[in-house]
Amino acid sequence: MSAFAAQFLDLSIMWQAAPLIRRGLGTTLLLCAIVIPLGLAGGLGVALLSLAPSRLVRWPLAVAVDVFRAVPPLVLLIFVYAGLPFAGLRPSPIEAVAIAFFLNTSSYYGEIFRAGLGSIGRGQSEAARSTGLTGAQTLAYVVLPQAVRNVLPDLMSNTVEAVKLTSLGSVVALPELLYSADMARSLTYNASPLILAGAIYLAILWPLVRLISRFENRPAGDTALG
Amino acid sequence: MVELVTEFVLEARGLRKSFGGQEVLKGVDLAVRERELVFVIGPSGSGKSTLLRCCNRLEEPDGGHVLVGGVDLMARGTDINAMRRRVGMVFQSFNLYPHMTALGNVSLALRKVVGRPRRAAGEEALAALDRVGLAAKAASYPAQLSGGQQQRVAIARALALQPQIMLFDEPTSALDPELVGDVLRTMRELSASGMTMLVVSHEMRFARDAADRVVFMDGGAIVEEGTPAAIFGQPFAERTRAFLGELAR
Image (cartoon, rainbow over all chains, first blue to last red; front, side, top):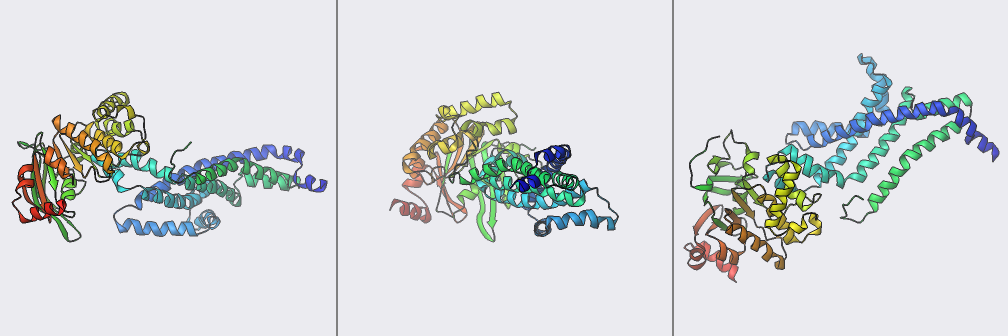
């Protein structure tokens, strides 16, 4: 048992690795701050465009969304990072992560927003337009707040996935949390830094996951949020 | 914006509308004078709701004109959002915004369309709620209100913008029978206060008591119109008689 503890739960080694892991955590949070807002904005754009009357807009968009949801995000990332240089483009690791995960997460967020917008009856926007609100105002004040509320658990689940996705940045040598922890592992020849990294992911995501479960278990029709 | 001199608050001229090859409005002419309460009756599918919805271009007419206070809603230079303020609309299914309080529902357009500051908008919204007898429910959400109360909030929402005319699209059809009275009372008070109203409804008793004029529509056209006494007493057209007879059974 103590051999296990020495390999996995060595506090002094965790302490030694702390500065590296702290920097890694900073990078992970930075990636989240890029990927999540970009994905949300892109997803909203996708959802709104998917309501466009023209098939010339909707069909290519539907194909793109399907492609970016079906291709594994790791494949997408490696293609952007290692494939695009053959076309003369050399994205930095952070740019590659931003581009690849923008394509992936905005496709997922887009589907969620689309379901949310679809859940709001036409009567709502008709009532708003009948009082003189413009289409954009109707969306911003009447339709979108209700749509977001209806799909909030899904948006949050997808956000958890996006946070986890950032660990793939380690593959393109981006020193985020997982990469830093793994580097500490190889420097100390001990698995404890990996455990520490795992514990940090858990600390960030577990409250979110709990919150999602609470939303999903609320009685049907209850739209109050707190 | 071209303003034509007209004695009518609302004037529809030669309105045409088709849905997928089916012509539901076949060149309808209808004019409503100031302070008039005009009732549109007719069998379902006669085009009366479509006529109403064309009057603020929620439904885009295929042809014809809609004039509000002499302004042609169909004209190219007309700001439709500005004009919609002048045409209040009340829907069968209320369509209150469920995520806003009654006050929020009524004040939204005051703030975003009229441009009132939040506080002034709140005061005007409260005054509108007071006119429908629901000032005490200002902080309630739609889900906490009865159907009749929700519909009165919806009336206040339209009323707060001080429209020149209000359109009612079957305002009591979605209500439980015991809640209809409150809404009709509010509409009657509104009419008594001088509001110009165009109402599509099956409340024949209300039409008989409160309407200045009753219009009978069938098959996308106006069959006949006249005072309630004339339409309900001695309808001229066979189709009107058949429709009213059907209702009386």
